[in-house]
Length: 71
Image (tube, rainbow, N blue to C red; front, side, top):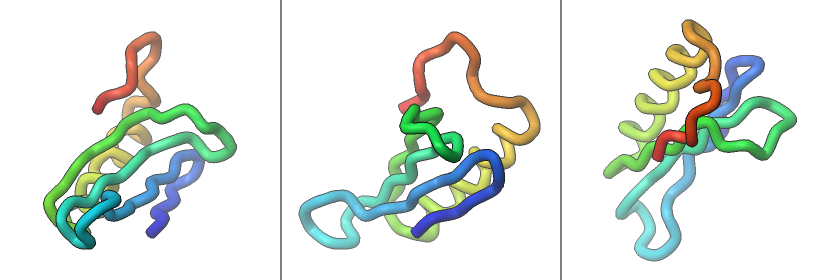
């Protein structure tokens, strides 16, 4: 599942292995392969909620500058 809020996007995906056991979202800037944040969650709904919160944070403050991605 992809959640886009220009210029950022989040991809919410189940982890490999047992389906539905763990979900994660990866946040990046559109057109870039750089990962701005990654969040693990126990289910799809929590991963989507975390993605929306992180997208809102990025819109409010901009990307983390000079810092390593949050994992």
